[in-house]
Length: 283
Image (cartoon, rainbow, N blue to C red; front, side, top):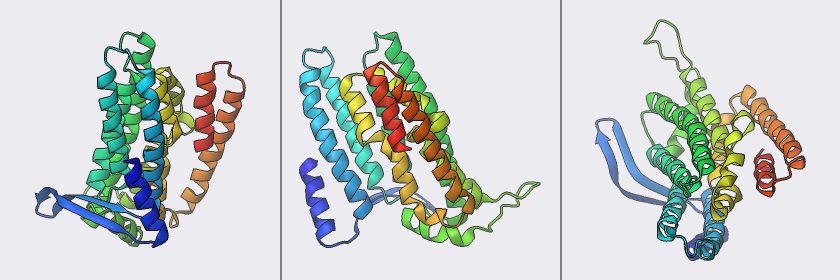
């Protein structure tokens, strides 16, 4: 995977292009068409390279760290599925694939955080992480549902391009009018904030440091927690049409950077220092 990431990165940087891959249709029901569609562009190839390099380094480290553990093969397997899900997330060209990969990342992060199930602290950390992330999962599902209601497609690029033209679209099927366009992007913001542990959603990231050290390194380096930042970048075509967003996101990011940085400076536990500093940098 690391070699493939390097090859793709060299190919895209040398001659900027968008590489697409359609495997087959996942769901086909009248207007509802969800395909296994992937694309590699300048944004996704950078993420693929980061995930491949850091994943490879941490994977080699975990072989020695977990040596002698009775469930080391299970750990390596979950670790591999996690890396696969992260690559699927950043290369997704379909909202269906994006949501599937998003959920798979959350599931595997839970399994990795509470891998040492005999430790009560690990179980509590895993439960807290999955509880926080489920909030983001629900809001991402709402955002995807609203986008499909407006555009009638799960194509990620088409949604980003066409949604701004429907900013005055209203659903009048209930007694009061709803601006579905506003619901869509604010739901995306909340989903991104929870996955990247911003401000009020930052509690789960420091708790996750109780996991095995390779898991902490993987979650805090450039993989799971950057999924929220990636989601904001991928949907950046929407944000220019909302003045409130242009103030809200920098404000939340700045508040997170400041508060988490202060919290890191007064900690004595090394893992908590790393956890808070990661949150601050994400902000």
